[in-house]
Image (cartoon, rainbow, N blue to C red; front, side):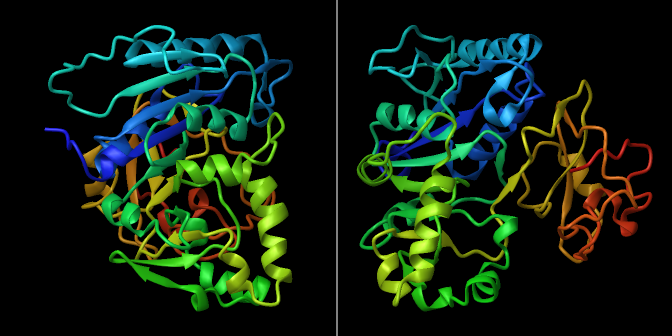
Length: 374
């Protein structure tokens, strides 16, 4: 039975989506939603915010797409609307939906949180799309997640909502790119973020030097009063405008960064391993059969999209699990050995200089299956 009170009743999940090459397939957003459901957000209401687009040659990040991509995206949005409990149209979406979807659920005994779809029609960009969702939500908290971020660990939602008191206004889930965050802050900015560490409600939080658009929990009222008091333009991101360009420089220049940080209240949950993974919506493609993708998780705690894959996973230095993501594949690689040097760190062996796809340690790891990996 759904909880009538507690953390799920206090949180609305806002999922943003926009045109990507895998449209009209819903495989990517289905993976996102399933990751949310099995990791703590099953009973939370969800609002899917479908950004619009402008016409032209394809530039997905800028929301500009050609006729073929537009047709595919409209088909994608139509599929989402068919499965939703309610549908809203336009950026000025009000409390009354344009029409009800066909989300097959008994109102007397719902089996999950309600799902609403907002069809924004015109291009807005992440920040302005999110504002529509913030205005529609009626809960104390919102959890923001872009369509290509996948939850890979169970989220202690009750503890996080309880921790949102005092200076804590925003809690981001740990991502692989910030696994060495303490060392990065010391090396790059000469700031020891452990000086501002908080232990509250059974969780440990590290202060973030900037706002990130990665999956995070925030009070709805803080979004309205603090974030959207700024006037965002079409196509802008909160992370770029208020995080990178405003908060980070302010903290670096402050005589006492800990005191200065109190007005921002951005924190990251400390956890033994990353809790989210980025699948890159602009890279993945639709596939007719299940092909192999990479998620850094363990067999017991992975996003269970294809359990058989966990048995095939090899133990590596950075313990990873190869899992199948139904309906998705990676694009043809241009990252051929010797063509250019990969600047990141390989997930399989932990070494810099090559990507996971070209790791020498992975030769022949999955015989009989096409190795199409991110």
